[in-house]
Image (tube, rainbow, N blue to C red; front, side):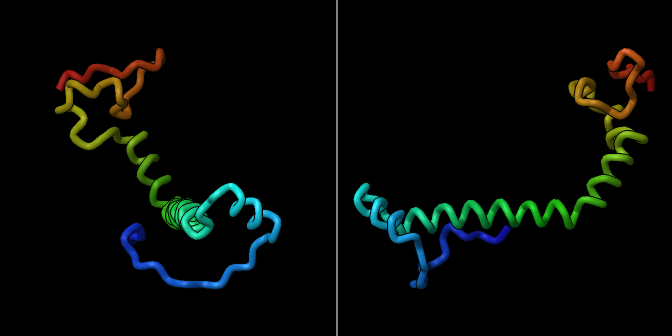
Length: 99
């Protein structure tokens, strides 16, 4: 995702609910800062949601390959057996490889 935190500010025109705006001002809220923060969070959320949708097929294929073949180089990782190397026993525990 492109860096957005350091981008310069730009004036814009917003139409807001007048009662909400009045109450925000009474509460001492910085409306620009609040809207900027909330909008940034929504943009990040939608960006990653779109990314996940666009990459869903690739992630599914990768997960299927790992489930079938196991993790690359898993046989060399003695510390990560419980993380799953794609070889699961009937009890749900990873099989110990003898190679």
